[in-house]
Image (cartoon, rainbow, N blue to C red; front, side, top):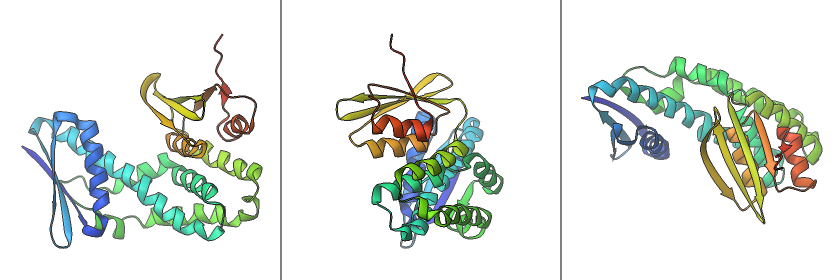
Length: 244
């Protein structure tokens, strides 16, 4: 029997919830999880057949990487840049782009630091083994703050977003975006295989997801040559889908 335990203080319980959710999605029936909360600390137990131990351990480390470079980094970034007093939608787009910036390099940094054993203390890890990451995050936030005079104009904001997105593009990923009346549908691909689709009511919400997914190629369908297509083109180099 393989068992790993991940712990976090109760004020960070959402971290364990996020890790557990990803493990359930990726391991399906290959592992079982149990989340137990005590007075100050919570524990996520992950168990499975001994033969699956290597796979489970790999997925645990992957889930921790996604947590740190997702919600943890985004919260850090947002707190640093909210002083800019930009419109809320601009702050949100910028925080997503800064979060995804240079992701591959930071994945390698985390994987080199995450304990390979079966006991992982998330509080200890984030408090004592992430100094290099915090320095990098502070630097990239400083980049946005130093260029803040340009961020109040949508065109120059999009130039910065394009720069940040370009540095975070994920290899072998592509996306198709369909405008369906007042809604936006994203179909995501990895190595040419459909890996999921989402529908959004708001254009900016769809942009945030596209930044997070960071495709190397983006094609769109159903858009006129309006401000929405122009923004997709300026940030993601989007091209119109040939439906002939």
